[in-house]
Image (cartoon, rainbow, N blue to C red):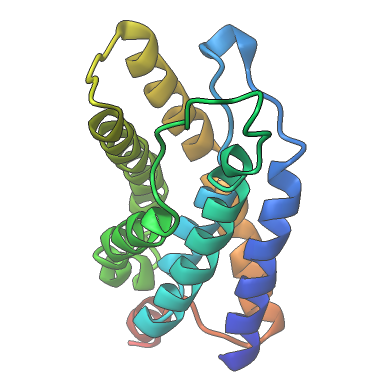
Length: 192
């Protein structure tokens, strides 16, 4: 189990590398596949709560480092007005909330019904992006929601969700390599 948990950590770190090369889909309102979020959500349902919280901390910290530190490293003479953005650390809380949402389906996943978890990845990503949009709107003091924003959130969630079976397949094979049982309840039912 320990080796599987370490492997999921390295898989999350690899997702950050892959995320740098994933382009936006111009035909789908500039939506993109959120590989990091998808890997975190899929692994969150396969690990224990402490491991999920560790992955949420690492994933949220690195996501904030990736997305919110860049605006702070700008030339003050060129950019005289500071950009209103969220503070470092908000993603940790959002990742943990998504992880707890996925952990709620853990009993179904442990019975071998991964399809519900795959569907929940899309819902969780939509909720994550919506919460992030609401927080950013609150910080900026302007809450304007348009159809293009709804399409962007929806398409990003849908496209990312479509890749969840691939991540679950990868996790299944990693669990098999490290002799970690993902479906203990399904195995018990098959033995009866």
